[in-house]
Amino acid sequence: GQQLNQSPQSMFIQEGEDVSMNCTSSSIFNTWLWYKQDPGEGPVLLIALYKAGELTSNGRLTAQFGITRKDSFLNISASIPSDVGIYFCAGHLTGANSKLTFGKGITLSVRP
Amino acid sequence: DGGITQSPKYLFRKEGQNVTLSCEQNLNHDAMYWYRQDPGQGLRLIYYSQIVNDFQKGDIAEGYSVSREKKESFPLTVTSAQKNPTAFYLCASRTAGSSYEQYFGPGTRLTVT
Image (tube, rainbow over the protein chains, first blue to last red):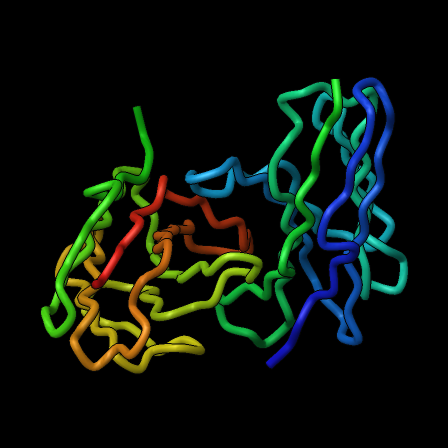
């Protein structure tokens, strides 16, 4: 089936640094979603994007819907220890009914 | 508070037994979903339901069954036919319309020995 590509699998940054992660596909998506999952918990929706080129912020998080509609980016600024977790991208394909396609996630570690 | 509840948080079963995982939502959402998560893997869709009394298979439905008798509830049964049932199970829901945002419950970790 369709896949969203997220790499690398893990990222290690210093507290206070900014970090960017992207999500790519060979297919065109009409919606991009970014989730964060803490260990042993369910994913929490961070940002939803619905238009190509759209740039949306949620506190220190900023995400963009790529112009080609085949990618999306998430940026976290001034990282803090509680940013640790797994960040998933998800997208909705036109015609995919109500199903989402998920990336495998990037595990973010923040060193104090 | 509106939300999605899954119970129990941890579940242990012996091999060969069927087990049912609970998912309830009071968000008045129309669609509900079950996902399985394994270490280092993304979320894989097991079953989903867009309206009461209707549901569709996802990518890995074999060995699982569901029902949707009420809008608020979407229980998942892991049957003895599921060859590798130990995993973290997540339930999600979504309102109708053009928003595809899914909201997740806290998950149930099932261990089968």
